Image (tube, rainbow, N blue to C red):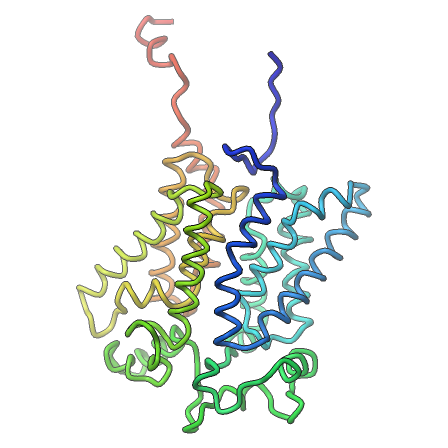
Length: 360
């Protein structure tokens, strides 16, 4: 019998890499639709910019390395990375910043290590961290949901804003962030962190306009619905066995447990578990990012540890760190720990203990 070895991603269900990547993209559609409904056309435009950039950059690198171009581009891994970047960045981010992020994801985080199956870091999260550290101001400019915006940009306005910095009517992003009553809108995570530094309690912060109109009390307007939409897509991936329950289950459970313990200690200062789960990228991270089969742990026990540790770091960095959201940082931190986790959680070789008992 001839045995063959292959690099990750490994799948127990008989699907090739292209099929797996396509199913993940399909599962993202409900969340992307919800995101577009609440936050405008910007995300879809960013998705187009990121997708074109990712395919061009990967194609050029493959040509330079004399690797098969068509076969690699049609595995949809570059497209999936581009979409993950697009849903993570502000919809109005300047186009050239998006291209820079995609370049770091494809050229540095993926191809420098040898391409799909060899990268040790999640490419999309590398792109997000590079952009956040390099352009913190631009990466914090999220528009309010359309229902609360004084001026909700349409498709042409969003396109103009991304490529010129101004809408067709001459408004910039800062002006569009101001809601009807003159209050400048921020994301729920930004709002809470700012309020807490000013002595406002968690309960008092929930009275902010951004939390009115949400489907859950602790979720910002629009953000809760978007999270639930991505949750439905994630459950589809689990149901079809594209992913296992280990990473998303342990990550969400860890976020709930860690946030719950802190909230019990001081409910005036520490946000509730529901707040952490429904705001930011926790749901997306649990089902679409942390489950990356290349950069995540590969053993069942290791996946549980990997996901739980990401959840822990998300809550700790959000609560005590300088960044409101922390999924990207938490994922990259745990990507570095994957070899160690896999080493100590690898299954025992069959017959190993029996051999020790007989003194062989």
